[in-house]
Image (cartoon, rainbow, N blue to C red; front, side):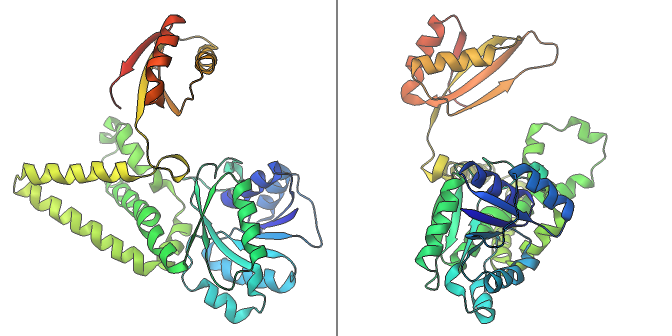
Length: 351
């Protein structure tokens, strides 16, 4: 399949890298010729007169006009966009194009706090959700093309209406960005010397605050109505917390924190499945090459899949700590196997 990707940033180039692994031939196009050149180098890009699929991965301001132009100049090609706001997009494209059946709108629910083609990864979308905008105008061929694209990227496809999509992303994507940026703005007013005391928790919450300001201001304005509605919800929550603390109401404050615990637990696990409870095994290792590979090899011998892992190692320390996240049913088996293989392994109740 010949694919033209318009937009050589993080998303467009990551899609192209994934499609390249699926055997597609790629052509990258960007208004920034240096970005275009880099992306074409990464995906071994070619030049085509015609293509089977056009993926538009650009900013909100440019999205509609490029969709309409692609549909006009490539009547036989399927056109897919990946913008994160969909309000009125289909209606606006319909008013400007008579080739609407060849267009399907979508939104991959993945990204990074850093942008640009140099940050692209072929596995960026692996195990992530990808929303397709369900509309009567979309042809079967267009839907099948999106299904191929999503499968090639290792993601899971979900179909929603444009309105429901915008309401969902306002809460699960746009609101977290605003909360992180708001805290970042507060931190920006903090004495730099005091920030030497900051731990990983602050960095975790501020990760999204490093996102591109130009891109996000466009997204938030484009999705203003549901964003404002969700902002009002969180402002109300914070005002309630303010009263709880001022009134020294520990019971209500504890319930608020428990509600937050429960919200975290509701977030699905991998591939949109219900979040699983994992068992954790911590292993003390020597600070020498090849230790991690040996652990992986022993886990494979035991027939146990590692769901996640963390590594703790202090500078100058002669040992490190590897913590494995595994299925609860495999905990006993792996503990016994690793112990008998000579590892210093410990069962951890929770993390």
